[in-house]
Each structure stands twice: as structure tokens, then as C-alpha cells.
Image (cartoon, rainbow, N blue to C red; front, side, top):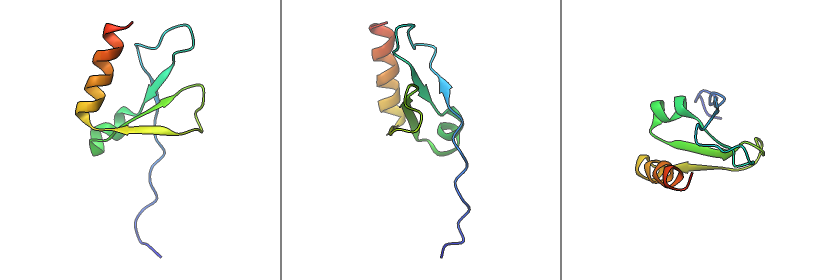
Length: 69
């Protein structure tokens, strides 16, 4: 049995780059600020899987979204 505290629930925020045609991406900014891990998920499937990205990979994702939006 572990004495580690239970993880806090993630607070998800919809990306400002999400389009109006179903391309909805959410990320957990508080988690990123605390841990350096950038969690990203599809807002249409909130109980589905999510990606955990490094800061560099997250920057690359945002750059890609800006250039294709």
C-alpha cells in the first residue's frame, strides 16, 4: 500500500485553435505548469485516451495547428 496522495483530477481547457467543424482539442494547463507534462485529448471523447507530450512536442503541435488553421 502506498502513502502517495491520490492524483488531482485534471482541469481541461479547450484550445483556442479548435475549429467549429469538430476538431476540438483540450489540454490540461494546470498540470503542465505543475509537472512539465502537456496532456492533450479529444474533447469529443473525454473519457478516452490522452497524449502526454514534452514541452517541445507541445510547441510543435501548436505550431502545426497555427499553420494549418
